[in-house]
Image (cartoon, rainbow, N blue to C red; front, side):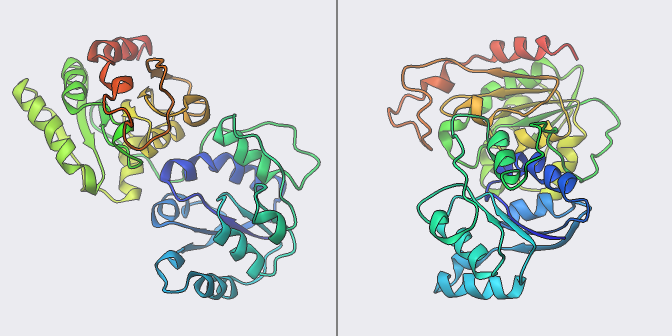
Length: 324
């Protein structure tokens, strides 16, 4: 059975869709998946054992996205079932253009006119639940059970217990705690863990700030991998960590997929919708504010108090509460 899956664009969202993908695999034992998505989502999910094709969607770069979407659909062909985890007009068009009869998408102004199955799904619940409910909306035997997040990239084996630090968040600066505070926390545990600083290509400067702060504290057992890993390597390295300290970000969900003990620092986003899913050793540090969650990329009030007010000591105590 050929199933087309349009993945979410963001790394973390794509990983939060993995329980839904596992539900599809379980409910359709002969399933073979074709994944379409952004480069980062494809690089993380293409390792699924039932994946027969993985395609990066570059239609946004085309001079005429409508035509490019049609051409991509013709290249993909017809499927027995198609699901889009994006709530976006061109993803609905892509499914329609494949001429697949059974197409699932969250109800929206575009999907309801273009696709066969468009269930209403509540937004005020964890994104994992939203994706699972969508994937199972065409079946009558779904009992509500959902697995943990799942990645099929082998975790790296480190010689010593390793603490991963992720100070970045691609979504925007409002989600980022401060480099000097991350360094203070890492320094506190440097006698117990080797330290890896993670970050994307646009977070190299931030990672360098953490490195400089660690040097100032005479910490030497660290590696700075910011801007030096591809998606597969990022997942593998995070998967091998013994502890992960992070902002609300894609790497946070990578850690959850590998059940890495995690302290997640939340500010402007809704932790009830995007926190780690079913990680046995996971805790959140956040301060309730009148202005949060604002869901903005940058602090609209310019004070960033939801993150600025969180102290290094609070995060240190949160780590201790995990009892690792």
